[in-house]
Length: 433
Image (cartoon, rainbow, N blue to C red; front, side, top):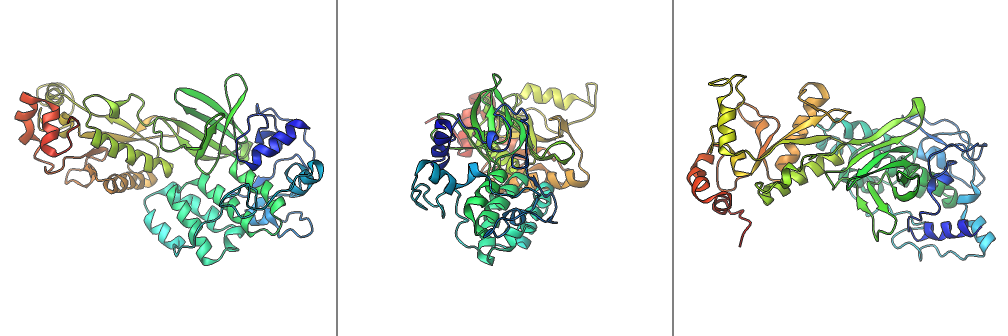
């Protein structure tokens, strides 16, 4: 009983309590092992489309499972998630908003946010070249909870979706909408948490890999050491705040919802710079930061890309130029040493990865759209994209303020005689005082 009381306090204060994994509230142990389940412990399955099956409702409930869009025959009140039951057991007096600033009901559930005029049509237009983002959007906009919102509230939810448009975000916002649309917030809390906590998968960060088990992060010893949510954040035990899963481009995330034939991949992102090319000593920090921001933006849309080429010395450039001319192989570049922006540490090549994390160069179908989206995101971060050239170079991005694409050779003498820093100084992006 003391463990349950501690778990409850951790939930109220959003501490990510390691002693009471949310896996246990979903009918599994924190190590992902299946417990013997009865009707109340059975996991409610989410609807992957827009149809809603009939669900059981308790008196006074506005149909939380239906608002969330769940396939469910067990949408009954769970005592472990019933605040009134906990109050009765421990004599707790829970004030609505005192435990969760910005939430509406004291459960720590975020508010929807300020009304906006954003529409789904506008979101679709912006994300026209982002197939995964477009495919995930109807999961939100077609849900009953979203439909129960005012136009302004729908705009607020769409604004949040725009920030990380992918299937994980859609599931999270679907749960958020269902919670705020429900009359019985205590019952709705369980369904919101179901949407917040992914069923399974893997997460690797800072060189350590974890198993995802119903929102918990489980280490190699089987200990629950943190949690990860579909809102795009994770928190390790002892951390003071939550961290974005998208911003570390070296992280690996495979987030799955459902089981067996009903399993759906919400996110599948690999290490985008596995060889540390962008952080190499010959790469300009300004350019590397812009390229990193580009990869972060793409990861938010579940577009999986990786850096394949970075700085090249003039000698390496000459060797590349010789291919198909004086050396065996096909021609791969028209630039000699000193004529490519790669030689100045302000260019990189970034390529698509398949589901297994392997580089591929397919440009047809959805992959063609992803290449175009890559160009859009790169240009929005101030980079020049080679895909717009007369002879397109789809993976290539570069940055050289004050110089045109063809003016790299104007810095050749500076590069040869004074080095990279002097070349960067001429472009106004030097790193030394």
